[in-house]
Image 1 (cartoon, rainbow, N blue to C red):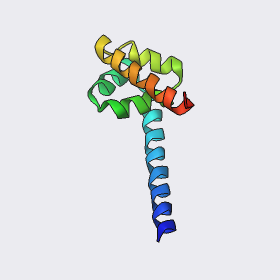
Image 2 (image 1 turned 90 degrees about the vertical axis):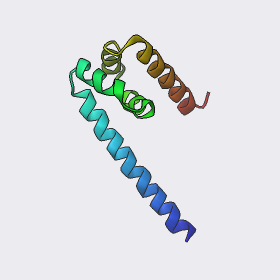
Image 3 (image 1 turned 30 degrees about the vertical axis):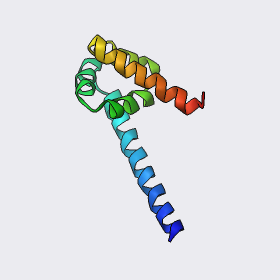
Length: 88
């Protein structure tokens, strides 16, 4: 039973990762100002995951079109996410 539950969890994680990867692709191909408008209104944790999956250049172009206060919050969350992933 435990192995079945773990397999289901792993499958759900894989599906979530695929959906995030799709969103990253979608927002990467939008014009920066359009992407900024949408990312500004969505839940911060999702916006951060999307920005984290983009190239630094593309994320920077989008963040430059976001309200300064919101951009600062997103940047802070991105930094925390990256530090957490690096184990520092």
